[in-house]
Length: 481
Image (cartoon, rainbow, N blue to C red; front, side, top):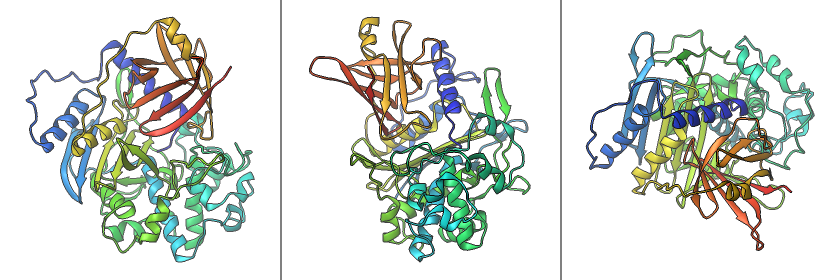
């Protein structure tokens, strides 16, 4: 996932717009009557189909697996719209930042072999690196606590030109650190990019070769490979952007731009095999218990808080009282998400060939996981709210110690008689995402009910802090005077 604040905001605002005007998709909604499913497989199929038909997808591929066996695999829509090629079980998708857990495993395999250590610095392994981050450690790259600025921004994402490794390094190596390494958590694609270069320096192989030979082949991942637009890849899906006028072809990145941060191709079945082998009960000689334990080991931030983003470049979250290992992906024309529930040996994977899609694959993954786990879906009941009550929560909230994809401030404004959310400081003129009040100082996003905003008051009744659950990722902020 080439995560970009601007694209995240645009995607959520587009989703919100669809909800507001009542137009959920560029295709006509199905008018057929769907019978109430009886089996788990039927319920999974019904939920996935409903998400596709009521959403905004060119194509969608879904897999739900328990103990390594498929509970449900479903494919919907088209892998190539122009030629009316349907998505099927063989369709290969760009998975964006789901590449990062593969990079994290690759680095940890080298640590296990003694070729690399968590305390090694960028400057030690890449002596030509002249950036301010030369003292950053491998552990800080893996856990996104380096402070190295993200090289992905709107200009880079729109350029779609050939890149060399040196070209990409030049985008961030000369910039100052955002914070002192180890002081905070902030997602940056630059961390994963440097890990890819480190893997190449230590092994003498290209990143793609190492992933193919040391990860994909041993795990039997027949459809997982480094993207190369010059090669013929059977059953590769085309990517699309969703616009107000329908779908547009997404330009294709040079693979050395996303590189070890977001360049892999894969399928739901392959990602499920990877997740079980890396984090759970999957039997694999590749991943020892020692490696598996380190992949999910926490990094402790100042104040004693354990970051949810672990040493395997993957998130360890709490979902309905269960452990959940997950990562999302976003790149040009593709959006993805996987969740692995190690205590239940359940994997849910959702891949889509579209950017700006709704509902987000992370939302679909959570819905399918609840069905497979026998849990009820959250019941959202809107409560009345007026401008006076909404005003209690308005203003800015300073995040610490984690930053939310490039910002350390959440803003809230009173708009249309209710409360609305903004990435960055509150502004009366900037776009905002409407929130739905569900009572007891808790809101959910009108764009996605998996975004839950819980406000806290002091004894005097003043709102003093905020806790946000964003697809299970926790962020906290203090209300600024």
